[in-house]
Length: 98
Image (cartoon, rainbow, N blue to C red; front, side, top):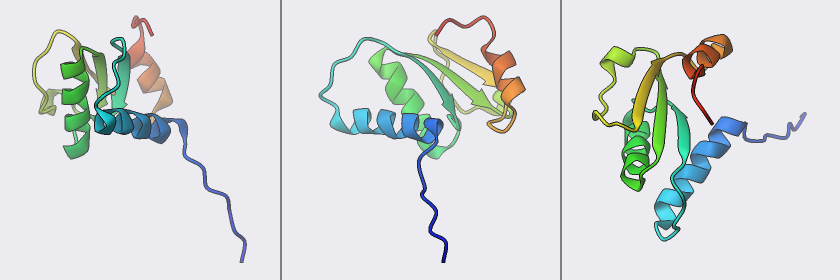
């Protein structure tokens, strides 16, 4: 049996880190600029809401941004894109400062 070593890719590590910060709740940090794939899903919506409440600027990449069930906010941008389309994500992020 060939045992493969599994490591988390950068995006899941980022989401895990954000979730950890939400759970700790006691860490004070400067506002962040956050990119979230899956921000329109059940868990993603909660992460977006928490980030906005903290004062972060959030960009959500969604396949269908017009259907995004997210609150209107000055610090929230929903862009069209797909996690499997790197060029589309690059276009969605054009002009954004990170």
